[in-house]
Image (tube, rainbow, N blue to C red; front, side, top):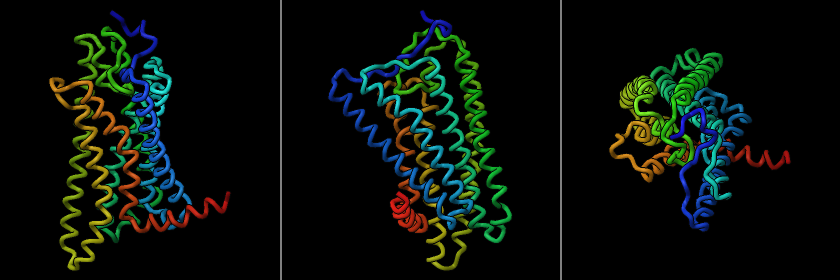
Length: 310
């Protein structure tokens, strides 16, 4: 029986013994990773360069792209390296770093999505007060609070998780280190301390979820009062990308962390982990740019500008 003081490394989910499938996994993850880098990188660059996009809506979108880039870079490169080198090892410090950064970035992303729902609420329900309620200084303070809350949330969970005695070996049945898998390695009763912290976090996340729902109830009520169909369509179009991103985030993250242990299996855990840690960072830029004419026009202008500078 191993304990946490004697563990120097962890073993991640073993890949199939077939070398061709290992390489397939590498190329698949590489394609998704490059798509996420390209999509989020273009959004960050375009918003930073185009002064017409220096508004609260796009400022928060820039922060979302930064968080998505960080989240997918925390898990995917190490997984690709392991599949290419046909290994499962990750150091103790590397595992703790993965847990910290994935919690930090995903936690901050959820807080940011909550803030973005408030942005849409003010833009549609209180448009005359938009610049007052969401001025540049206010937006900076909100963004700083979002990142700080994500950092504190991750620090508490990571410190608490890795202070638990681990006496069930060092095999993590996942392609990256995550808290549910680490808790399976802890002693029979020691995990209860972290469990209470998870319950408290779930309550906080539920409060944020209620805030998002209430914001959209008010938004829909305001939109339905708009007399013209074109006006209603335009108002809905500004909210749909954010609503789609929130739905994708909630529907992938929540099942991964609150599903009953009775239905847990390595294959299900793997699918859920891919859905919440790999898919959203690659898909979010597409969701936000598909029906956003303002962003698409700015992208068309910024791409030739990049080539001209080169």
